[in-house]
Image: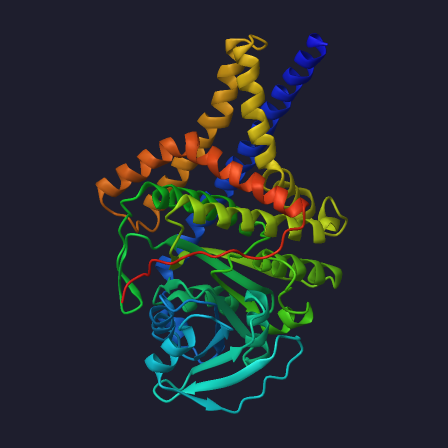
Length: 469
């Protein structure tokens, strides 16, 4: 019996070792693709400024959609930031999703709203709309007040109200870069026939000095938890997403900021309201529809930092966020499971979907099982020191290398944290992020996996400290 258990656990050890080889091998591939993409992207930026697009009469009008539920703390700052965007022609539609706090009252006071008549008939069904308001002081601002239906339902209401060929979906807690809309619209302006969706890098706003809806000074937070998330965001955005975008294999555009073709978003039924991963779900649905119709298209991720968001500052809030993200990821993967090695899906079927399914979807459970299994084997002497060293090298050492490479890519490109003290702190947190924090978030993601298996619903709440005035 003991020998059978030993053989089983040692087999699990080797399986987990193979998992880490695959995981970090994929990330190294994405990093190489990202480095190539960033080199070309930075070169294009040097030889072509955004002022050319600002002055171009062919630059399309965009509607910015901002759903808001109980965002009274940040809503005025966020809306002002959007209204001050450097873009030739755009409308802002804020959708109050039945907030129980002062969100609507803050909007009325801050922007002098009055009721107006505006058609809300559209192709996507939504919860009832109570009223539509326009601003006396800002002609391009509209506010929709509706019954609570969730973020996806609010975005669908905004899509119905929009009259422009493209819409930009943003979170109400973000602070946008002044040229954010120009940056994400550039791929569309350059290739309007093929580009159907664009996303960009989301940065961590905790610790930054925010004035009038803009990040006046990028600063690293003092607290450890947001620092770990900065390192995590750099790895995810500069590493994985930039690399996947370069081969048209991007499966997710952050719900915090993304531009979409209204025509194609409407064609797939808008945002699904039965998932908490509406951002990934819409991108997957677009891929599926466009592949089915044999359309030549692109889903693009730009390496530019386009917005800043407040990340969880407590473990309780981080836990709820990561559980929700994991559940949304698995819901989308299950709904579009036909992509896995599916004919006609190209790089999506043989690279992107398998990566998200095996490493992002079910990976946290494999990781935690591996840590426990290897620890048990080492304590009982069932594996030798060579195996233990190989496991640490692959699970921690390679992860550390990838993290530090992502930090280096940030330093060589956009340099949002230019001082050597900032670089030293980022490097320090990059060194220790793989020991402790990674395992903690894997545990939270395993809880999200369990939530998915028992079909848990709902978003949970994330209290905001506020991003400034």
